[in-house]
Length: 143
Image (cartoon, rainbow, N blue to C red; front, side, top):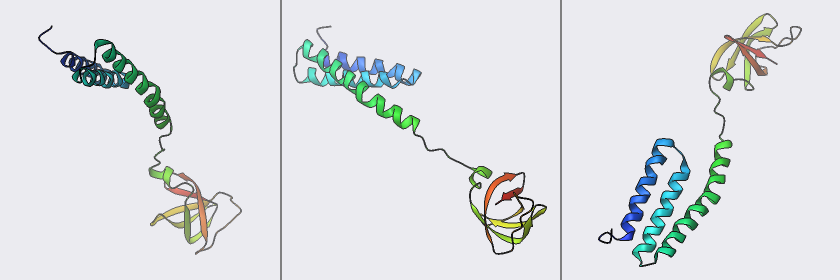
């Protein structure tokens, strides 16, 4: 053990902490591994064992205290990706053929869609802009 410098042992510890990081996907192990690298750097500069352990503890705790809340906040604020017909709801369309409660045609997102009015008593004339409130099968429900 005396033949190998302390900084090598700290790097071995960092690598050992990297294994559970990969296996369990728990970022805390990565933060501990960075703390071990900090201790290896302190050892490389000739610091004593107490300073090395303090460097490991301070860096690890600081990373956990600072990085974890930031990562959790970003994980919770992921933008919702809307695709398919869900992305068409709320968009505007142009009436191509008269639309009423029984049907008609609109141009929505560059495509021609069959459509019907949400309110059966209402009708929309060609050229009028309407809002798509729902999609039922291949029919857009407009307002």
